[in-house]
Amino acid sequence: MQYLVIFEGGSTSFGAHVPDLPGCIAVGKSKEEVLKLIREAIEFHIEGLKLAGLPIPLPASTSEIVEVETV
Image 1 (cartoon, rainbow, N blue to C red):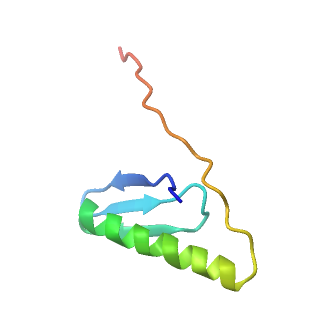
Image 2 (cartoon, rainbow, N blue to C red; image 1 turned 135 degrees about the horizontal axis):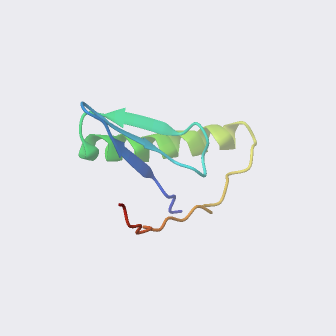
């Protein structure tokens, strides 16, 4: 499956979360590190859902860049 991951850069770190998997987050020192960590977090999250007998949410989120004019 392919899930949308939102990345956010901070002054000293990067964060990532998965809108379709509430609570699935990761933080790292670089985008490369947080990408590796969020991939592991997604796998761990799905494994936990399976063990709990809960349904695995299907990917449903999408994204689009919206251009606006600023004054």
